Amino acid sequence: MAFCAVIATMSAPTATAQPTTPPVPVAETFAGTPALMFGDEPTITDAHPMQPQAWSRTTDERVVRLHFTTGTPQCYGVSATVEETAEAVTVDLRSGTLTQAADRACIMIAVFGGLDVPLQNPLGSRRVLSVS
Image (cartoon, rainbow, N blue to C red; front, side):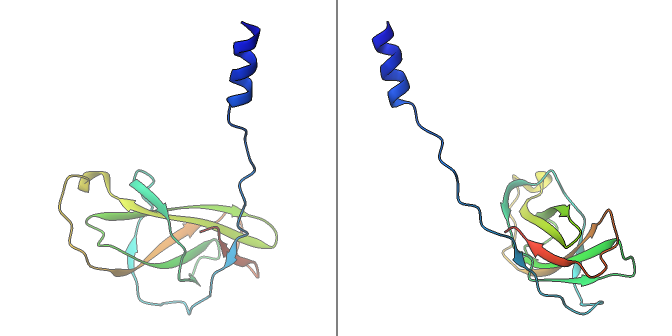
């Protein structure tokens, strides 16, 4: 019995540290950049990371607008989470299929979208970074 336990222990996979990619800066664009606005959809399926192409300020200092390219809002959605520090706002933007469109045929067309992401504190001079 002890022999089996030793073999099982020896053959068990070992955890290895995954390399972490540092967040990358996102370019700022002018306020009012045209975009088809999306709402945050945390229930999207087949979500995958997506790097914003740019960000812009809004009239509310506690909101940052992310700019990205994705599919039509009838089939595709986006969701973002934010981590804030005194120096930076780090966003994790994800794109995926809307749950109500999972069994539907969707056209393959790209749209330039925007998502307003609320912040806990005013943006001020902090940098906007992306983890994707």
